[in-house]
Amino acid sequence: MSIGWGEFFALASAFSWAWAIILFRKAGDSLPPFELNLFKNLLGFSLVLPTLAIVEGYQLPAFSLEELGITLLSGFLGIAVADTWYLRALGLMGASRTGIVASLLSPFVVMLSILFLGESLRGWQIVGFALVMGGILLVTWRQKRREVDAEQLKQGVLYGVGAVFLMAIGVVMVKVILEERPFLWATELRLVGGIAGMVIYLSLRGRLATVWNRFRQPLPWRHILPASVLGAYLSMMMWLAGYKFISASEASVLNETANAWIVLLAWLVLGESIGYRKVAGLLLTSVGVIIMLLV
Image (cartoon, rainbow, N blue to C red; front, side, top):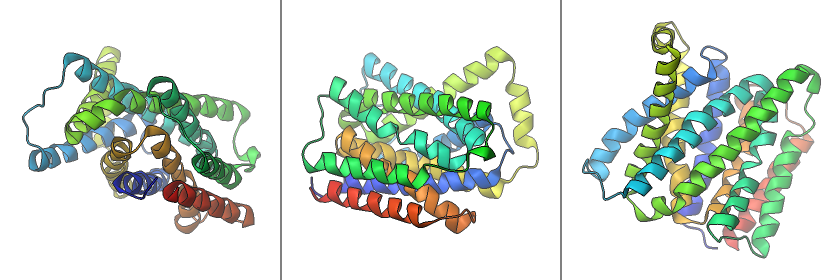
């Protein structure tokens, strides 16, 4: 495997997502997870729209009905449901524990890619995968469990596992479409699927007015706005670009570095503690990524 745009996008996406998570944590509980996810997706849609006009134009490419349905469903599962559950897990059990659960994304993607895309990791790539996973677990494991109520921890784990599994399903099911159709159109259609699902849900529950009133209240926009730009625009586009240019299995392993970045940035920005174990985990993860890039 040589270093190229796919590897760059996968790693840059991880770094951008880590910054988004740090800023979402600084925003605290100002918005519930569902509303926070809806806002970031609406902002992401608004930012992709002019980008689409400049790069690809507004004429809808020749998506078949099947491709259109798969792309919209991918957005509903991977954006509307998965991101909401991820943010809920983040609020229930904190960034480090959520990072442990998020490390399951790569095994899920590898498993689904082997089953449905015919992909596999070989030789030294397996070694790199093991080092990345080991480094992430070393960084995030054995936190102070008394800080989180047992029931909250249980709920957080369930939401987190469900979130990363749906993320894996969402990206694997759209992998071929990302390779064959215009990239920005596929990205925007995924956002449409996610937003449409969330708006329909709010309409059925009669909560549209309530959510709109929440957005009009004083909120820590200095954290929410940049976090949403990073999470729903820059990070998401680079995340999907990584899956477009390299295999889903390889991209998912490189995406795992986000969890190590979260720990490092939490130390630098939020003042959370970092010890020798976390430093060793970061180094182990870095070695694994280097192996994945050079093999």
